[in-house]
Image (cartoon, rainbow, N blue to C red; front, side, top):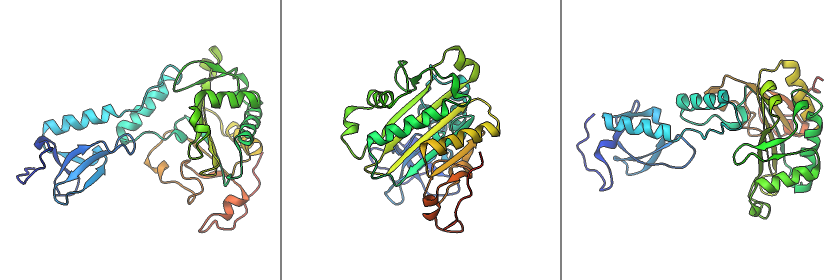
Amino acid sequence: MDYTGPLPDWADPRLVVQLEGDDEYLVIDHNPHTYPGRLGLYSLRDGLSVTAFPRDVVPANDFAAGWLAGYIVGNEPDAYDDVLPESRITRERDFYAEHQHPLDETIAGVASINARAINVEESTDAAEYQRITDLLAALAAREPFRSVKGWVCVTDWRESYPLATVGDVERVFRSLNNGYVFDDPLCDRVIHVANDDGAAASRHGTIELIVRFCPEAYGEASVTINLEMTIDDESMTAIAMAIVDSYRPDVVTVSTAPHGDDHFESRIDDVYVHAPGAPVFLSARAVAGLDGPNSGRTPEPPVR
């Protein structure tokens, strides 16, 4: 692959490349900061910037190949190995190495359960704290949550928090989010925690909990539970139904590892695009908002 045409003054001739199956010449340009893994390129034919996965780029020389390899490694997901187990870190890095985009947080566990409430524009922070408290109380009566004594932030520091009361939940949200988040209707309120149980956590496995809500701007609230343990279908169903009863979501989905690109294509129209797999629960209003063959279908009552 030899390019002999003109180059912009800023372009490095060693970084002229092509895309798989295309004879157009491009030069590696920038990090587009869309999400980790994507690469910015400049089309020498059209004078336009485009993005692509490194796996789709055909390097012309060893320098470009080495640059791409370094770019991939430099964009690996952060390793929260002081909280999450090494098996989880390895799974995320292996997925990134193969697919060159991060493993979505909604399917990151050995088993993952996702719940989302839609059209909650009229909700308030206080109402969401209560909803989350109800959820945690329901989960505490089921395995593997019975042994959870506290929760520790995954991304920042190892302070342990109780999450037993509405006051506990509000304190954790205010501790783990910047103050401006609560004044800005466009900002998600998020907590990302894991069980902090010492020997119990080592024996039973890590439980990761991600809760986010932004009622004013997006009218959505969601919960992701990633379990770093093998769990039978009956227990998974029991957890899912506890979420249905306590959190009152519109959609609940369940997925299990291993994960692949097909997980990112599975969707229920636009009702819930981030959780893969068939839904185990759809509320009546979620079904009413669907287009296509499921439109207007009333879901069967969940089996308990």
